[in-house]
Amino acid sequence: MPDQVHVAVALEGAGWHPAAWRDDAARPRDLVSPAYWRDLLRTADDAGVLLATIEDALSFTGRFEQEPQPGRARGRLDAVLIASFAGPLTRRIGLVPTVTTTHTEPFHVATGTQTLDFASRGRAGVRLVAGASPAEAANFGRGRTVLSSLPASGRVEDSPEALAAFREADEFAEVLERLWDSWQDDAIIRDIESGRFVDADRIHPASFEGEFVSVAGASIVPRSPQGRPVVTALAHQTVPFRFAAARADIVFTTPATADGLGAIRAELDAAGGVPRVFADLLVLVEDTRAAARDALARLDDLAGEPLASDARIVAGTADDIVDEIRALAVAGADGVRLRPARLPRDLHRIADDVVPRLRSAGALADDDGSAVTLRDRLGLPRPADRRVRAEEAA
Image (cartoon, rainbow, N blue to C red):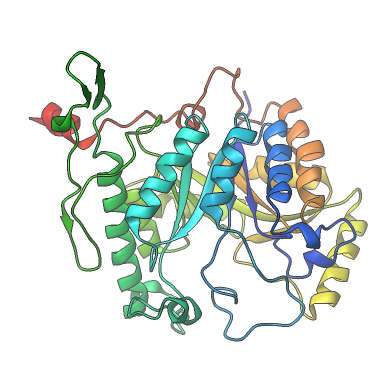
């Protein structure tokens, strides 16, 4: 059997190119309509895409955008609410909203993602983003970790602000786990005779006091279908790798080449390992390479500058995208997360051309349809809550 991979998509507004909203097939009037997101997620779901991440931010500007740049689409819907809306409207796709760990309260995120897990019947996840920009901090007006940019070295470990952001993210993830585990699986007893709906002895306080976060009580939501929603994070270097190894089920990463993925996996393993590693590609798909180059050049002209990304940019045919994905599979990727340059155009090309080619080549890590939850489809076990694990260890 050839090396097989899962396919995920990353959904961002009108697409990952800043000028994507000006594409002929774009729907700029619909970007903040529920129907737009329903259509995108159903397209990916019908194609058999494993999961979709939904981008989010807490400011009008981009995360490291010092001043608003002209000619860009602005405004967005809340990612957790988009995912919850789409839960009952989709069938199998994992729904993974992005959450900023600074300013956002872990209690709200825990209950929101648990609710999403119930609404989607076990298909919830969350993508944790560490730190906040000055614009995001200004919107909240309280002193928390501000990350305006990385230092000249580009290394997180050389920035006290970035290190603090990842300490805060680690506490945030710890509290999520405690809240998700605060109800035991059998806490709801529904004993009509005694009039007891829940067994209070099976509901436990989170009881966490840290440098950045303190939480006393239990979640208001019972333990959800997956036990815990799937945690994901994007990581490029040592400190984020350590965070992902400690807290994430999936790490998204951006190797410059397929060969570079081996070094990334080695560093992740040294940090403690992550169950699943997905490589990111930013893709623009046309019938010919020349047409793809022309389409990208046109968008670059409209934006006033060439497209730049932390992920490798691949503008070409569906076969070119498939070749890139298969090379990453051979290099050891468990999956790929495709960032469509234009929405909905490139998502349709992924659904109609890329995924079917991978499936026919035997390179798509698919299943027979019996797997229900996102954890099941990933081959990840349903985690026991921390009390059960503590009892087993004793």
